[in-house]
Amino acid sequence: MRKVAALLLALSAFPLLAQTAPAPVDPMTNDQVASYDWVRPEADYVRRVVMVPMRDGVKLYTVIVYRKGTRDAPILLSRTPYDAAGATSRSRSQRIEEILPVMDAPFVGDGYIRVYQDVRGLHGSEGDYVMTRPLAGPLNKTKIDNSTDAWDTIDWLVKNVPESNGKVGIIGSSYLGFTSLMALINPHPALKAAVPQSPMVDGWMGDDWFHNGAFRTFGFDYVLNQTVKDGSDAVPYGNADPYTVFLEAGSAAGYARKWGIDGLPGVRKMIAHPAYDAYWQGQAVDKLLATRKLTVPTLVMLGQWDQEDSYGAPAVFRAVKAAQPDAPITLGIGPWRHSGANYEGYGLGPLRFEGDTALQFRLNWIKPFFDCRLKSNPAPCKAMPAAITYATGAERWETDAAWPAGIERPLYLAANNGLSFTRPQGEGSDSYVSDPAKPVPFVPRPVHFNGDAWKTWLVQDQRFADGRSDVLTYTGPVLDKPLHIKGAPRVDLRAATSGQDSDWVVKLIDVYPAENAANPQMAGYELGVGIEIFRGRYVHGFASPAPLEPGKTYAYGWSLPNVNHVFLPGHRIMVQIQSSLFPLYDRNPQTWVPSIMDAPPEAYVKATQSVHWGGAEASAVWLPVVGE
Image (cartoon, rainbow, N blue to C red; front, side, top):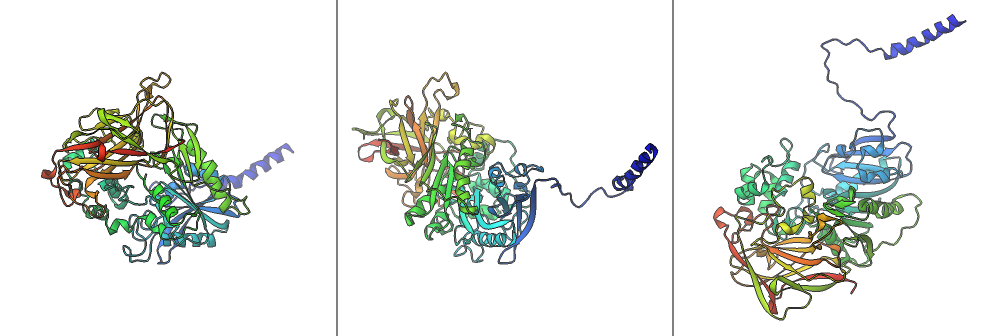
């Protein structure tokens, strides 16, 4: 019997051997194969790639991911220029949480269907790519835009994804924030909620390309990286210091010519439109949304130290609320960098917060916001406040029924480089010489436009600029009680120049006590609470640049980024004023030229800048103070 059993066991193995034995391979067999499916049968998810048709016949590359067994599920959509395939293959894993971005884990872990789509013309999608394609209308005669593409995509998804419950939410940061907002214009009925994060809203007023008329030079790298099929990436000057590279190139257009990118359509559009003309105004998403009733509940959010798109989210909130006071929109501000809500939020640079603030916001606000609007048979939605913000300094989350939540109080520049909440009795001025040949760097050199140095530059210790002869510094007394501000500090600068044009940079700074044994890195730290620039030629209107009259005092007004910050007892408030923030912003030649973008070398001259304090021309920073 034992021999029979052994024989049967041996025979039973033959079919297995036949199945697993490799076929003979000729030594000269081609080693390349067409494809490999890295999603194995044991994967806990389904990953489908489909080409979704648009109304004009163009098909967009779309990746649909959900956990196996998902049924009656809401869809969470993101439309991206940054590669949908890459966004859904963070790791070639068999676990759904590992292949998707970190922020997706709570959603796919709770039965959501996650969808990423390449915008038209990029990566796997068909069609022509126009960066931040304008809405169909005067600037776009095609009748196709990101609003129509979102509508067609949502329509296809709810009809062709049987695992769906027919409800869709949209989310995304930066460019994906822009596409999320565009979906709100003539929205599909199945679109029930939106969370645009750090959205690109107005490229001229204060997002990626310009801030109050001053050009942000890294935009050229972005254009080269995103719009060139062969040879895309950063401008190829290696690891040289951009401070020197841009200085040697002269103007922004000179830089473009030197590096052979002046022929790129995206670069040409920027150079051709230095002022706030119809080209920029017609693309401003806040203006577009203000002319339509907002029907989709929206949580629009950003980081307090957003180094790329600090303007857009508050601008959308402000514009929509002004046109529609009862609009279903909430503003969220966390203590983050650009897109920081989607990563770890324990700190930023040297700052440390109360826990993982990004995870807190995702779990306590974003997830419930979507759940009650997208799930089948959900619990009723809780009433949303006007604003959800994190109070830096006090380290806590707060909600408000209105935003801004503070009442403006002027902080005046005063004699002896002081600051006072009382208008100075006397009056005077302080001067410095601005030399375009030696512009003030925006961070200590060497400058970097990537990595942590770029992500955290807004919280850089400002002592590197304090004390320069071309930087004015005003400091208030040591605070004996907290000073809490909630809103956008407003600059009212009364200043004159010996030139015909000038840039003005104002920094609102929290100065830490000189000694700090518990945290030595923060001893004497000068933390930028808000930093912003204004190009003087636009003092009469952003669409109407004009030369300045030398020696004449003008009233320059602009806002710093929105914040929720507490200046603690023992700290001081500081204001710094300068005329360059280089090479983040191009240099102002300080003579009159029709377009600074193409100023000739001889146009760049020194100028004496005078900042007035007290009297009829009292310069101040108006702080949105609460609790008084």
